[in-house]
Length: 245
Image 1 (tube, helix red, strand yellow):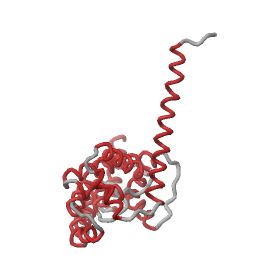
Image 2 (cartoon, one colour; image 1 turned 60 degrees about the vertical axis):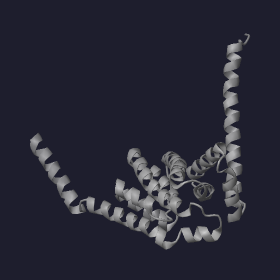
Image 3 (tube, one colour; image 1 turned 30 degrees about the vertical axis):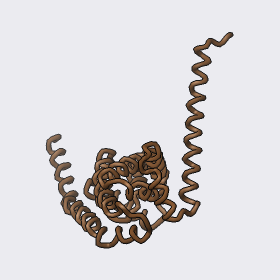
């Protein structure tokens, strides 16, 4: 039986796509190793950021790397320093929101496919317990807003618990936009370690901490007490049984 040109084209097309996928994965793996295991001085990162600030392809690559790193549970803070000091706060906020939101959704989708995952650290156990009991918009947004809070924990815990995806995405947009806006405004123009440390001072991050705590409290106030919710459920069950009788 002879093979037609059409069948040969059908077999070569998947091979081409597989090769592209392998090349992309290998490239990302090399970038992960470079970012995570090779110590980079802050001055080097700033120099790189200044050199690629006006290169659209380089900016796109940084965002792809940021999204991929957050998807597999790695922090993307180095990408922040490659973008935020060299772009106006509004532009930098939109760029970082794009990369981090893609990484958040990727982490959610990846962890949602896990059949079992036991949290090991004390913080991850607390986040799992919190989001199991309270997964409302206010609670998820508050975790995003709190300064220094690891977004990777929120992404993976939300996906593993299979929280509603629309609420997860909306909370990520609100929380990440607020945090990136403050961070990008603070570090815009920083060119050395001293300027970076001064820009991210306690007085700069305090409004985010206050906002996060207020959102967390608001989520708790909106949630009815456990006794009342149980009583209302029992009453509803009784009414339903009465109607059946």
